[in-house]
Length: 337
Image (cartoon, rainbow, N blue to C red):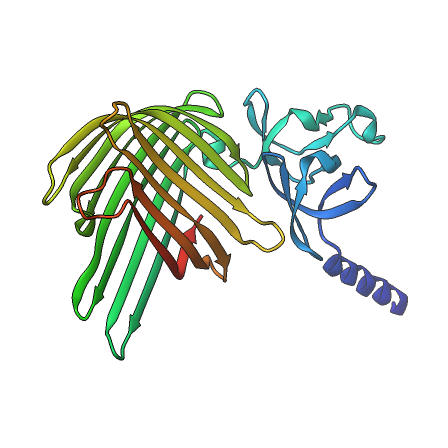
């Protein structure tokens, strides 16, 4: 009885300390990892281990992969199914595998998001806020706020955003700018899309009562991964400028748009650059350029610190106004994903 009691206790301890099941991957350098497959997106496998947390592994470095429970798999032909997965880079990589071994090259997604599987959409957003106030020989305050919401499905992307800048010196306004914008991208391949967009802007100190931009064209998504997003757009726009003092201006323009974000894996710091440009198609028409560039430094729970440079340039400003307006912004932000 005493021996049986010891054996039972040992088995109980093993059942507590050993996981009931675990996924396994083998890398091409011979290393083996045990844990849980979270997802495969683009060229990145997200794998969670009890000893090192969540890892992001290049798909090209994976030799074999086994899951103990069913996962959602989408192949290159966009067939979607739930199954226990046994996959290998080459047929001979798994000596003891069952007959049905899936080549790694045929796997497009593992546990795809709703926007990747085509069975829904993903909603993301971010907002930033900066405020400074000084007292002494002169009193001044500056406020900046901006926000953006993106709805992404497999076949389309909808973006709506806006920004606000206000500043005063000795209780007299020194800056008062508002801008709202929106765009709709319809993807007809994984990378190519047609877009339509619009923008409204008011800037009292640049003599802009209301500037509207509307148009559309062709876009190309160069990168869309966990770490890097880069899209380019080009098309035809109609620009209308209603000024407080100077006359109204209306012209057709070639518009171009750059949207770039890249996250540094080691630090989590995010580099971004957004650019909207409009080149008038006639000799008398203006050229406009707006850029938003900077860094987001991760803090915790979705919050980040922000360092940003805004530049607005127009070739033919209102009389008495400068061509370039620039703002340096330091603030806090929050991103929802």
